[in-house]
Amino acid sequence: MALQEFVLVVAGVPGKAVLRSCEGLAPAPGFREGVGAVVVRRHAPGLAEAVTAAVRDVESAGLRPVRVAAGDWVTLADVAARIGRSREIVRLWSVGRQGPGGFPPPLNPGCETSFYSWAEIVQWLRRRMGYELPDEEPVLVAMNLALQLRRLAPRISGMHAVRELVG
Image (cartoon, rainbow, N blue to C red; front, top):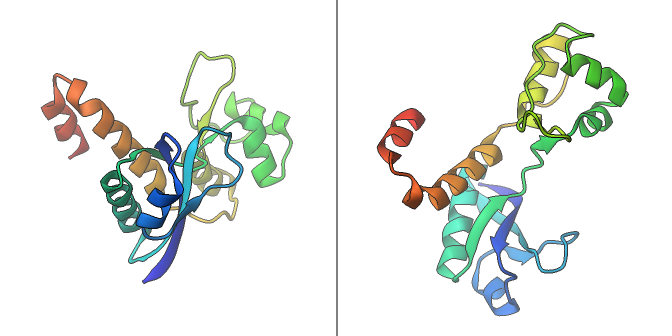
């Protein structure tokens, strides 16, 4: 089993007793005061299993997991910085004025600041632009969607249709 490490964002700020009661939890540095975020380090067969176990552990300690810090939502400036190109060339790719076209659409179309999925952009850069980037497993993105779906499920009248769509 490999050591898996990630940041889990929780509602509220966990106290020291809660952190001691859960395996492999420590306060996450770099988050705003009042934001509950913990670094999770645990051995598991895979990242998905580690996240699932950590979510169960923090829930049993009385905390509500909100999301996993996945770093997936990025701006065009973030993309440029990650790949060592200018923001302007990335912007031109995004509007189809440079490059092969088909740039992934923003996650929030119509907003003043657009955010994109890094997981989608990595695939585009690899397939369309020939970049040699690691093929990051989008498990943290999927886990965030699962956590969001768990929170929303009680309010969704057609949950059976949602389950059918997920497969």
